[in-house]
Length: 104
Image 1 (cartoon, rainbow, N blue to C red):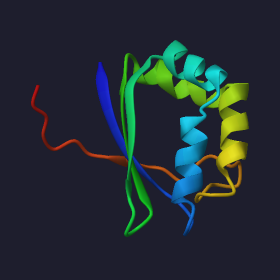
Image 2: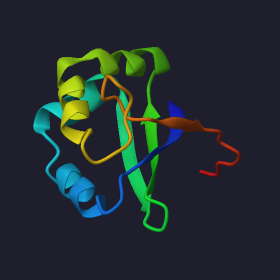
Image 3: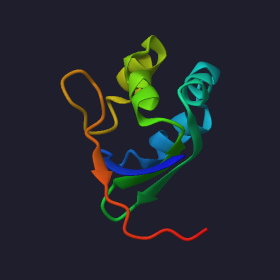
């Protein structure tokens, strides 16, 4: 299992909407995350900066990366593009974080 940490950024005043959309996460999106090996997925928000910090455990990085090309994932990106920083293809601007410590 690989632990992945990453950060993204919301537009101002979009925290409530972001949380609402994730509380109503589409069943197909949940299925895709699991199908491509994602487990134990958590996203945190720093309200002072609108920075989102994500954590997910994935079975295989190559398999996980292929999930980005699924139709449901691209539909999710399009759905979220109005509330967060994105690239021209609507994928979120996402920076991987370097793990410096872990304790089971």
